[in-house]
Image (cartoon, rainbow over all chains, first blue to last red; front, top):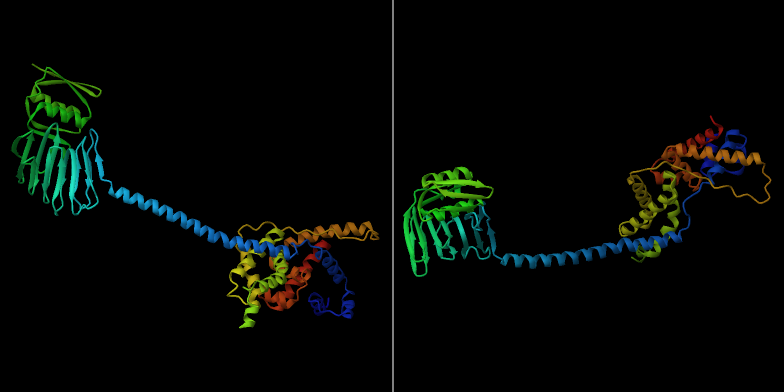
Length: 298
Length: 171
């Protein structure tokens, strides 16, 4: 096979006389046969106008969705942002509220780093807005405050306002009685017209217009350590605290609830808590599910 | 300035001209690689959309190599390459058929053999060979498009031809 002529044939530059020379070769005749079959290959669409029309549609389509997509996306984003903004403004103006149920406590961090430990069955409310100018919380129930240094800090209760300058104190406002214990710094307590200041270790208990003072030698209220402690407290109040801490119902029969109790009970084990109360008070107890029945030993 | 404007592919009439002159070759180019006519059509369209999007950067002279390159890349980017299948049209014969039935049978048989042999060629061999035999492109053009020397193009084409010849001889 004449390689040069074959290349000429394949390259389409062969002359008729040269082709006649090639045709003397049997192999070349077979090449011609292959070539004739190859030329019948089914090819892709050869129309260009339909393809061009199709392309122009696709050009438009490939350009348009980008614009439409972007616009609708932006509209959506703008709408979402607006809703979010309105929501944020609305939410930021709402006071933050915290509520603890029976047998639960909650640690709350205030915007300035002050911490409030909310005791069981209590409610705390404050407003994040203007917090630095107006540090004010509303309390129902009991909470321990560890206040960061700064402007005036006020705890509003149903029975009075407790105001401080960077300190640690406990406020308990329940059962018609406001109890404040100052553990660090100074605390001012005011009810109606009466105002008093507490130093570290001072405690005050206010029932109606009756104020009584006491001294505390612990660094934290007992309930912070899962302990409830009482000093010369009415048994009625102790039992109420027990009900709150353990989420139980106490049925007391033939018991003088005006008896005074000094001591503390654990908030983690109902049996030992009942032991520590009933033993010195000469009482007996029976636990039936969520009910505790107390009877006098006498 | 006016001349530049006339040759600008962003100018729709220039683009149309480029499309019409190149699109069939591009479709075939991809078809020779994959044996799938629909895919070849789609990839060619895709490649021209890329040309349109880059019309400001590509002048008319560079358009051909740009579209070939893009089409080739689009082909390579497709992950799943199915098995190559080539089909031959039934030869249209004059109604007064004077060819012997044996010849017709032989042709059919050869067709099936070449079909299989074509699928078994390497992609580079097949592409160069079919560009030459089907599109009627010269060695130089094929060499340019594939980025190889004319000599290499000629070798691929003649080697492919020899493989197909052997397939019908059952060697």
